[in-house]
Image (cartoon, rainbow, N blue to C red):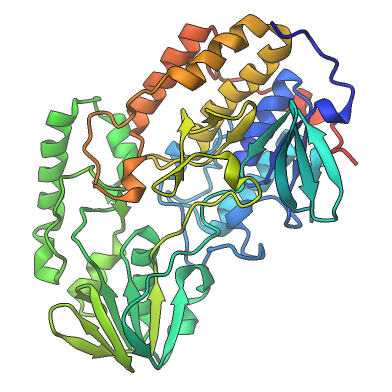
Length: 457
């Protein structure tokens, strides 16, 4: 049984890597329970991808939250009522910085400080910083996000025009005077296709399969809020009812060139967009099948058709990466195998926060995980027997978190989590271990803002 240890030494702190939403969630949870920590951020301010000045961010000018204001945001820190249903990237950045200020989290962050390497050092973790210095911590929380390593497919042939990944796209004005092909139709691809439809000389979207397109509003209510307000029906009832509603609202989308989906509703990541259908209806953008080859200024498709194109923009997603600690994670299909999406099964006190694919908004999910993480680290000192019980669960518990949904057979969806199932299972774990749930008022803003912690030198 572990003994209680003093937390006066910098070597006994926890290290948080990253000051985006996930890292800030962890910091607030640690601060509440008095878990000492140091936090490092390679950029000059908080916000992660939502700061367009952060080098490498995939953020573009027209980007908005795809979950609505009322169902999103940090726990017990609602977005302002003055925000629209779907806040812009600038509003989300402001909200994230307001959260940081409200709980006094900025003081513990060392900005402009990259983490170059995390290595096992006996019972500790050695963290090498960008300036070459080395610090030791009892635990490390990797919270650097999943949209920093663009994935670009290769197609046979040579292309005479420009090739971009969506991560480098910023403004709709970049499409002026160009014939643009967007490859991929995730949420970013759909947004960017609408920008191209309104600004390019011609706009096309190449897709490999059909998707269920969900409008952002249903009867004037944000779609996720509409779903949350209604009764929690079993999947066998919810799927046909919501599917019938979509057909009533949208009609047959194949008449606009969209392929019929080869999977059932809810079996892929939600594609929320209301503008794309408008642009398809007006001929501002056209659907094309998968790319077969590149031939000078022409792109050829698998159906034998082709288009003259000036710019190909790949909206084909990102590879997940934790480059500073890659070898300490068990990677499967490009995803780290983590208990409850956060706890490393093989390496004690190494965590990944934010490495999750889920069919809901993310911020409150981060808070639920951070709550468990903070109580676990706190118990290592104050209730070691309880922490040891959770140690055994990390190694031996393998819950199915899909909620009975047969997600698409793809690398992205093989690790997908159903939000309702996930939250229920987190509640089961809390009850089994004896930990508390999040409750309104538990994060006392005045007390936490007054509690100062300096990052280690």
